[in-house]
Image 1: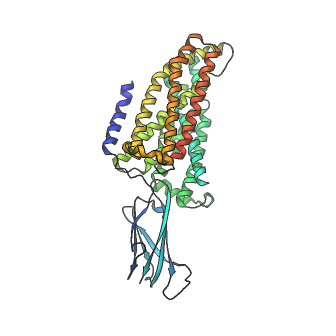
Image 2: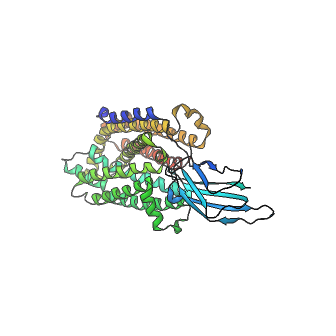
Image 3: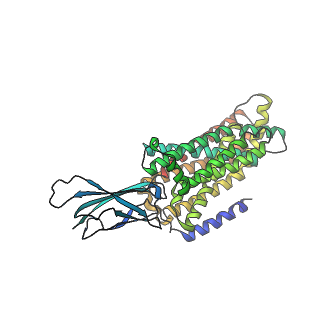
Length: 129
Length: 303
């Protein structure tokens, strides 16, 4: 009886040990973006975000805020209207500003839950020349 | 605050569903179908199941509301039906929740039929309960593993939970059977308890082997056994070490029961020997409770 109960277990054990450790086990993180964080770029028509894990689409929130303008010392944060679309792989997202971005500094904030059910988020800035 | 709430819900749900599985599995392997007296005991052990299953439904619902709120980044009071629907359709944890609710509903109905069909009711409750319990793997680290290894991880984690459930449910069943009772009924129960304790030895051995093997598989997938040495530097590792120590304590108590206390109880059936087993079982149950509390916290920490 013990042997019988354990043979499927042994099969699972063998299969898993042969495959591991390939499993990704971490909260979702931003791994790259275009424009990259803290860079100066000439023209931006869309912003790409790449994540370490699959995100659950309905939990994704993203916003774009203009935080500075050349020649203005104290620019209040101004929200920019954007469209957002998740990539097919579930690990990338494209934000498209409704209008061309004028020169200034911008901040991207995102948050979302990954497959591990944890809600994560971060922010980064870039400058349009 | 939300983390504490989620951990508490997880702890109560683990404990509840393990009792559903383990308490209803007990009559199937430990009691004799043909004996009307034992059929009555089977119905008695199943008597608590409608409550356990209903509690499971309610806690599971509360857990889903809390999880959805935390994943959507809103307060529980700001949830709407679209958010819940998208969880159920879009996420594996939501689909697992739907399966869990259906399984628990079936178990609740089956549990109400215990007086007419004690063993059939116990069988349905234990299988449906095992499905509900195994569906909890989508709420932990196993949910994030991808591909074939992910399937293996979830399978292993599910068996781990079911093995633990059978063990913990047996502790509860023995504590119910060994309640001090007077007269002939007490005598019959003592004889029954002595026999079933003896019979549990084999099932218990299977549980321990399943729990240990699947535990090692999970460790390999989550951290890698080769890297487990540096685990002790993290809160995850320290809690995991505490969990293993408690598991060791449970093994020690189980061995004490099997090789010392049960033979003494079977030989004398004295109140003192029954009391010794009760104390050891209570301690074993407390250790199991602490393990579940640690698990509820562990599944939220990053290894």
